[in-house]
Image (cartoon, rainbow, N blue to C red; front, side):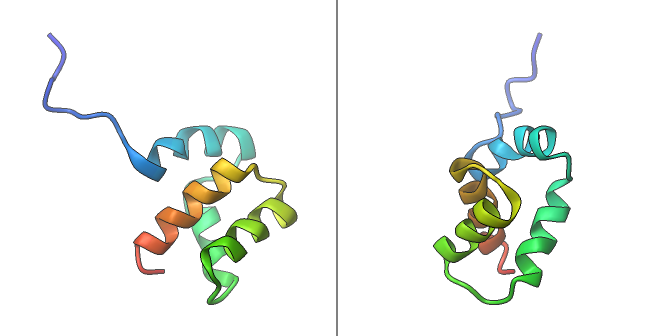
Length: 72
């Protein structure tokens, strides 16, 4: 019988497995890219990932949301 107490991953983290598979880097790599970019607004981080790393909008947005939620 499946463990009903285990809930599926929700929110930005639900994108993490596909981000790692598509771009070949662990999430920690992308968090470091964002950290190294310095203080920016949400959409500026998204634009950085899209233009400099060829990331799609949804994946970039998910990473930035998770990054900002952790307080950098």
